[in-house]
Length: 202
Image 1 (cartoon, rainbow, N blue to C red):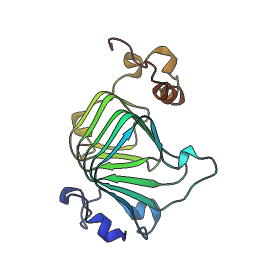
Image 2 (image 1 turned 90 degrees about the horizontal axis):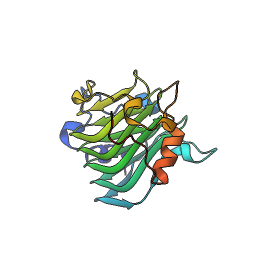
Image 3 (image 1 turned 180 degrees about the horizontal axis):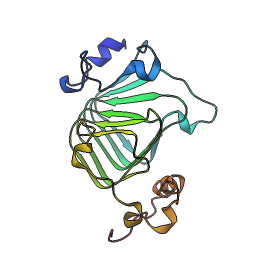
Image 4 (image 1 turned 135 degrees about the vertical axis):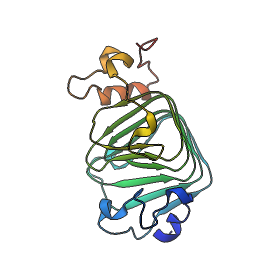
């Protein structure tokens, strides 16, 4: 779908109108994308889902934009991982998942609400971004880097959300001295449906 037509599918409060900077295509790609890949309607996924170009060694292409014109629900963990390239996912509705891991140059915009029943983990780098226009609900949010673009409830103040101390949330095997979170171990445990958190959290 052409870029302008796809952008028009976003709710009014989420659209780029010349003054808003909710999705700066030119900052990511240098130019507007030639087209956007669009899925119309709600999308439900059962089980684990891994998206982004970081999951396939040797693969990468800038300028790819995917848009779900509806809600995205994942009955399991969702890992969005871009490595060295910017592939963006826009969801016009809400996102619901068991665990959400946003890694490296992940670029995710949720125009509705974000509901994560267990862990929301942001391990972003450079221009990686998570932006949620509606409410965000999660058991715990863990963030490995302070100077990254995370906008919960559409604002840079994270909508009042405060990232938790990993040591108070995670079991010792998932802690890392440098970043606080051993991301690879944590994602692998989520894929295997293993316990990751202290019961109860401290």
